Picture 1 (cartoon, rainbow, N blue to C red):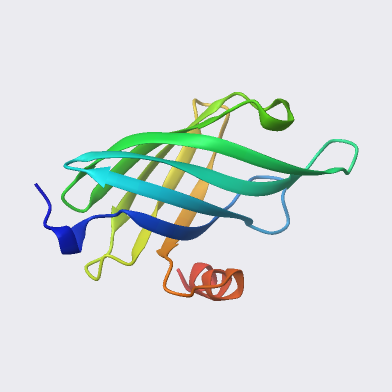
Picture 2: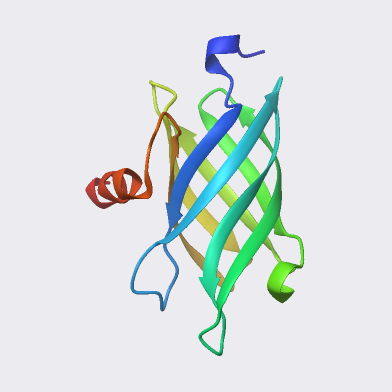
Length: 132
């Protein structure tokens, strides 16, 4: 079991790429780690088909095995989104960043970066995302 200093519990700021989007999509995730088990939620903004701004929420369930993180983000139906997204990433040595790839079956994929919140802003996350 991970020690208390290694737990992923907390707020994380992130970005993910998506084909057809000119900019990475920003999101905020709240993670709760209990042993190897992860749960939590995400909140993100999107633009609907008619150009209408949308707020999307999702639930997270997954696990941590040492520095390897895997979770499924399931949209809760807000704005009509119900699908699941599979995330697999690696936690850095400082336990402050998770970097990896996401997939929706064989339909779509991209990369993501999450940074543990310590006053991090969207701007700081975007700078870190661009360097990796």
